[in-house]
Length: 74
Image 1: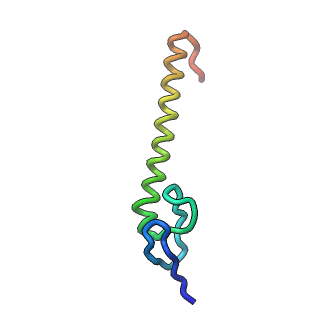
Image 2: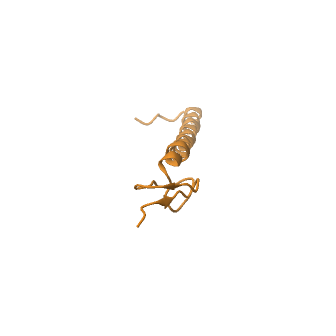
């Protein structure tokens, strides 16, 4: 019995545990190469995008508070 699996991203075969391919694919497993060069960078970009949105929302709220003369939260 072969322990080979097929990567859902590049279609190459690999052995071992495999990796969760999200956010590139929703199901299956990916190889270590696709995980390192595709999946992890996509996850980092996603987190950075979420952080940018959060920071923008905080800046808008700070400006609103400043313009309305409200006290800053402590």
